[in-house]
Amino acid sequence: MNFDYLREAFVEYLQVEKNASPYTVKFYQDDLDTFFLFLKEEGIDHVKDVDYAVIRVFLTNQYQKNLSRRSVSRKLSSLRTFYRFLEREEKVESNPFLQVSQPKMSKSIPDFLYEEEIEKLFHISDLSTPLGQRNQAILELLYATGMRVSECANVKLAHLDFMIGTVLVRGKGNKERYIPFGRYAQDALERYIQDGRRKLLKHTTDYSESLFLNARGTTLSTRGFRLVLNKIVKDAALTVHVHPHKLRHTFATHLLNAGADLRSVQELLGHKNLSATQIYTHVSKDHLRNIYKNSHPRA
Image 1 (cartoon, rainbow, N blue to C red):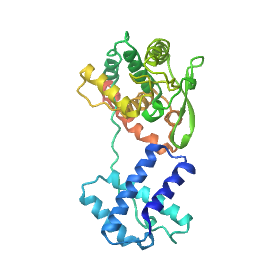
Image 2: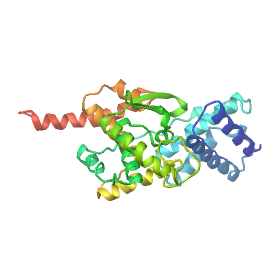
Image 3: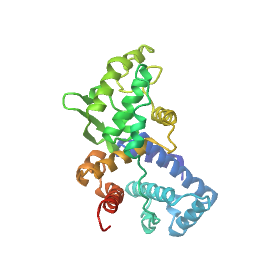
Image 4: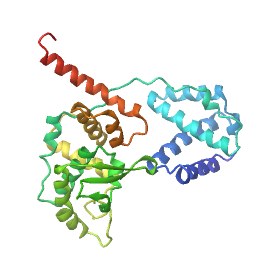
């Protein structure tokens, strides 16, 4: 069977029917390529010939490459979805991946920044320069809203409402949600939009509706966001590793530690299931435990 044809058909299904983001589609493509290469090496020419035994060999093959349980779990999810698509298209009679359980995952507590650490980051950017104003606005907005970097990269000027202090965010599956932001983020955004962004636009003849621009005046990529954050952390001389998603973890943790309810945090983060948000309660419980130990006379 032509694996390339199936791959293209599946990608089209993800893009058109599932409205998957380019980032998600790429992960599916990579997982399919890995699986198809394995099938060719094993001399398996048809997706119908894949059964439980073949899948077990595939999993063993992946673990031998020192892949983490999380990576293997993602590949299994991708292939389970792929075979569900094949079933629908009547390319196979059943989904063999339904017989395989996901690897047990160790529940790790999300890494986050303490208030003193994140406070240092807000005093680094040179607010007299366009890029410094942009970087400060990025940092303030990410921490104020907890949005994903991919979501932040897609924010347009029109998505901001300064009258009520909200931003329209398009998340996974193109689902929309409104997230409020506070005075610090609003001040940083207004400064950047009225000054720095206008100056950056002078570097190009093509007007961009994107909120955040690079030095050439065009849309800042998700990779650009990471480079910006890395520079801020380096200039702040922090010894901790800070990645964009860590600001999302920090946002959720600080809200829960301050007494926000789990459902509200779930809505702000754009989580489909409450279980995805509950992982942050572990951090919150640790925080409360420390307060108890330090405050109770007989702790």
